[in-house]
Image (cartoon, rainbow, N blue to C red; front, side):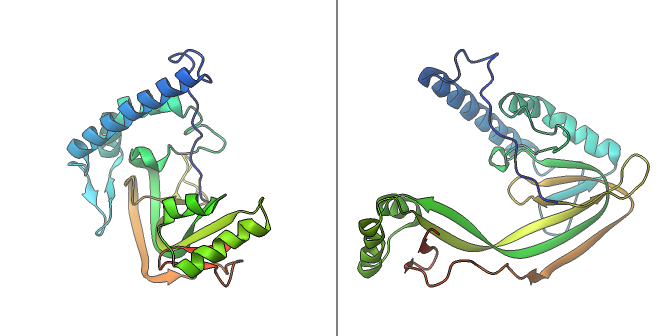
Length: 235
């Protein structure tokens, strides 16, 4: 199974009236400070000096003590992040911290790692042509007119822009404390890095040379295509 990330929650024990404009501003400042501290620490501590790299990827393996020791280095920053994302790592969902923080993902009791590439797409929605161009770049004059026509005919319309990319993922197979194999977790790791406690007889299956097919797209015949983003009227 795959995991979305834990939601942001302004810490009320630090920020007075977190729903006010001043409170939201304070929360943003604190989060920006945390992100800067993470970036500085990551520059110094990543890649880890006590673990072994897997293939050419930002994945590193070690025994339990090595991974635990490296995790301990990150613990103060993880604790600070949890003040903003208190649902992270809690059962039953065990949601991770957002990848935007770039804190490495740690997984223990790993028996097998299956590396894959998947054709995927990024999707963004827009309520105006101006907002679309601001995020996705310029389009031809004819395409611009077609996009404007969408809103001229329906003021409540939305545009959806899709960008195709190759998504690199790891299917992580772990064992529980009884030694039973658990259902695999599907992790995106390229931005954060992945740290695994490798069990004896740890195996790696590398299927990156055979990208999996992307599911059929519900949208066809784009209104605009600038070579990166294809734009459609949202259904």
